[in-house]
Image (cartoon, rainbow, N blue to C red; front, top):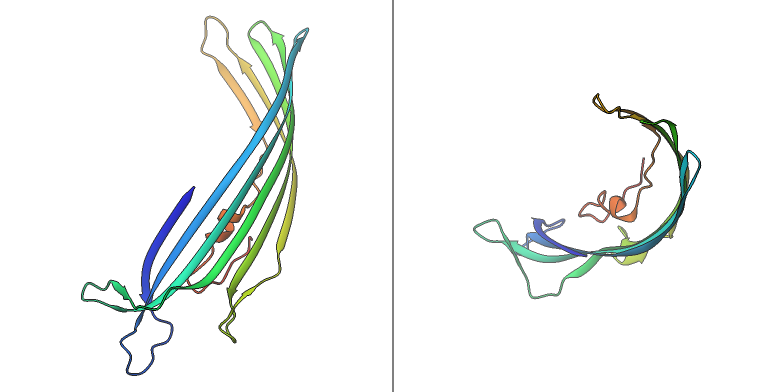
Length: 197
C-alpha cells in the first residue's frame, strides 16, 4: 500500500531579500504485510472445540521531504529549482504471534456456553532519522523496540428456544498493541516524533 501527501507551509526561516517564504512538504508511506493461520477443530461429546494460531508481519516506511518555495496568488506553494531534502524518515516493523483455544459446551438442546482464551505477543521496532536542530544534518536515532504480551479471555452464553426470540450474553477482555503506523501519526512537519501514552 502506498500513500502520498503534499502540503504547503510557511518557511521556518526567511532570508532577508529572498522571495522564498514557503516550504513544500511531501510525505510518502509504504506498507507491506502478510501472515498465516492454522486451526484444528473437533467434537467430543457435548463439546465442540478449536485450537489455532496466527502469525502476522508488517513493515512500514515513512519519508518526509521539504522543498523551499514561495507562495503564489492562490496561497499555493511554487517550489524552487533546488531538489527536495529529506527531513525525516521512519522504518518500522511489527510481528504478532497469536495462540487461541475455544470450547463450546451444549448445556441444553438450545443453550450453549462458549469459552475462549487467546494469547498475543507483539514486537514493534522503529528506526527514526530526523534533522538535528544544531547541525541541520539528518541523523539516525537509536532504534526503539517494544514487546507486548496479553491474555484475552472471553465467555459467552446463547439460548435460542424454538418458540421464543434468541438471547445471548458475552464478556471479553481485548488489547491492541500500538504499531508503527499509529506512531507515525504523531509526527508533525518539524520531524519530531511522539511516543505512546
